[in-house]
Image 1 (cartoon, rainbow, N blue to C red):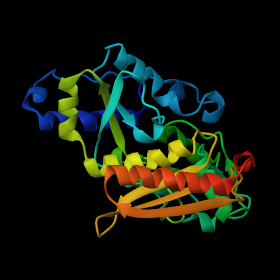
Image 2 (spheres, one colour; image 1 turned 90 degrees about the vertical axis):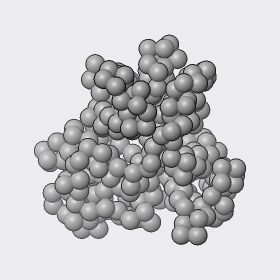
Image 3 (cartoon, one colour; image 1 turned 180 degrees about the horizontal axis):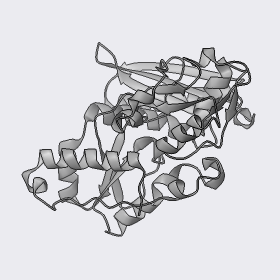
Image 4 (tube, rainbow, N blue to C red; image 1 turned 135 degrees about the horizontal axis):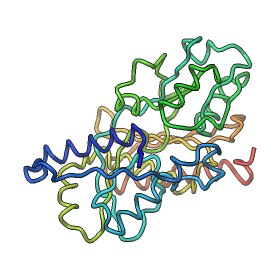
Length: 304
């Protein structure tokens, strides 16, 4: 079976960290990578929202984990639904990569430089709504899916004038030479859990849980938990433009920024929170921010 180059890069990163953390695992053949192709990888002709949204990149992997075909599952955290399947836990996040989005174009240096009517390719409603909010004269080709390599090929073929990709994925693939410019977080708030890798195991597998505990990066785990609490409160799906980012500031506090938008970008609602960088406080901040934006948005907001 074929896994995307990025999924493989993340699996290799996890393998290397496991080998470095435990002598047993460093032995030849101690770790085997099993590639599982998911529904989200296979069906590229339709927008994600039309084929079922979030769990499309995790379902088959979760099933293999529950069935005992694999012992740990490596996920891009932004693909993981806010519910974790029964019989599994997700106790480990690797250190987070850069969360920003990149702008890639053959003909313009930034979004602002694109002529009116230019077509940008992105399957992300979060990116689409924030682009159109700032640059309503641009157009977005929504069904712009496939792995990083496929999207860059479409750009080279002139299907679109520009695209936006997560910097984290390009760094993990050693493909940052393709980046035209990096978008500031205030211009393009990232997806919840962007740049974070999560590793799951069965809830009764103490051995694997102990291995994963050695790899867990707690600062990342707490930030992701805060952002996912925000997403869960909003009941976020692939049909809803939602962005959220939690980070530790220079004083050690948590700064959270959250955003929801109408799909056409005409309305963007933002909020922020600041509080102690501790699990319970950060979950509460994420939930509270989500409730605030839900009440601001009102019924019918996401239908535009």
